[in-house]
Image (cartoon, rainbow, N blue to C red):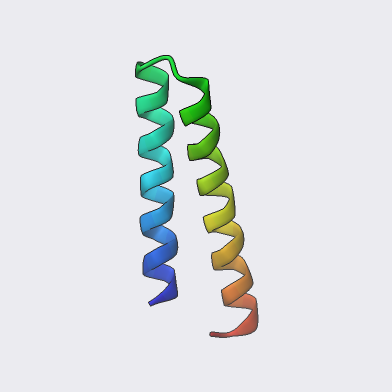
Length: 51
């Protein structure tokens, strides 16, 4: 279940980066990039713990 949340967060982050690029909004791009990085870190940490 945690992997589904992480995948959804990555998809949302990528969408924010793309929309921020189209709308010329560097703040939205930064938020999207931070969301992607944190979701990947969360998934890796959960996989290492085995939960």
